[in-house]
Length: 117
Image 1 (cartoon, rainbow, N blue to C red):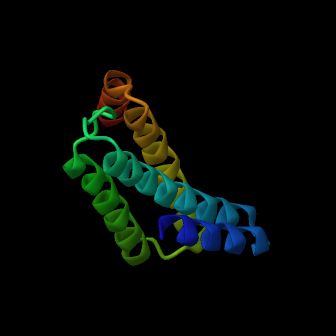
Image 2 (cartoon, rainbow, N blue to C red):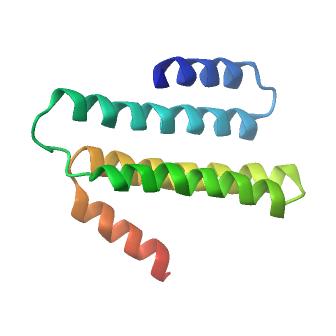
């Protein structure tokens, strides 16, 4: 299901005339693919090799849902809203990829740097 949604989002992105909006759809698609990949890995592995607790995955999903909702409510200018969303998706997807690959310490360090600088 995540793959179908990601394909649909990529198809929408390919039709966009605005590059920032297209990038946003690509980021959304990639986020859904990462969530789907993590679920797939969990379903075929009996041991938690990825090191990502399920509540962490849900935290990522919830965080992005909140960012999307808050951006819609708080930022009236669409260009600024798209820029913020692109930044948040890129940052979050990078951290999520690191965690899926098992680089938890590197992801922790990057998160710490984001929140302290």
